[in-house]
Image (spheres, rainbow, N blue to C red):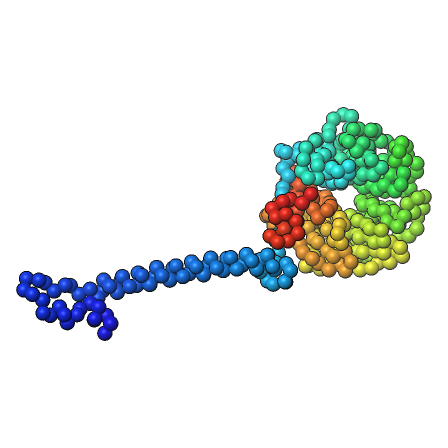
Length: 390
């Protein structure tokens, strides 16, 4: 009835002659009413959105204190930066360390070392005859100096903390040096080609002793913990424990879980050994020499482990074949997560280093370095939104 009354009225029946009755307006008016209603609904919806946004902003400011589940509490993804070969002179980057406020990266294919600020400033490529780099691989730092192992030259290059070449140590007992560790004024070097470990004076570079009678077999990794040297023997699946002050043999660790050990990392009381054959991590108490646990399983995705690092209660493992990085809780061995995929740009990751919430991974086949930074703090949290941490 409402539509009829609007469209046509009985008053139109008695119009004077010459005047036409108006056309029925029912359809036109219905469309007009629908249009008005649509506009009104749109205005109401817009008002609701504005009010919701403003309310959300205020809730977001209160969420950190009240514990509500507002936008401010959503986990922020880490930021990933990839340093290119063109900018940083990278050519087969294999290992890295931090010294003097700078990152130092060995370029095994470029016979050079790249030095740049860990805040991504002022890259400098160190190369030339004075350095004697030839297949530089392992690198270690201490006592305001750096040492670089040249696998193809059977030598060690020593640099000052500013990058100045100090000396090149060559000749016996060096033979395919693959790993180094500093203990006080002693520099210990593992020789994969000679199945030996050599001791040098870190201040003068003079050789002190060489040990070959400890069952060393293709030693490939070295770590220091609790005044002990821990040498991983890739060929016979053992770890040789030596006195770091004298080089004397203490014990030899064996077990199926140690098959093909290829890299190590240590804290003051713990040693972690990565096995390439089993894709596992063996944790050892360096005070007692006992195995604490064996970390393994498909979820960890440890495939071709190449390097490990410790920081902030986390153990990080780079896997060359898996193009991934596994993050593990240092205290419990629990898996935290696996970093993999295109956003990270991993391609043959060979070296890894963590410092102040940042993680660097050298990509051997891509000639890049992947740098992973903490997420930007959400509004209302501590820190300045959008500002990179120092």
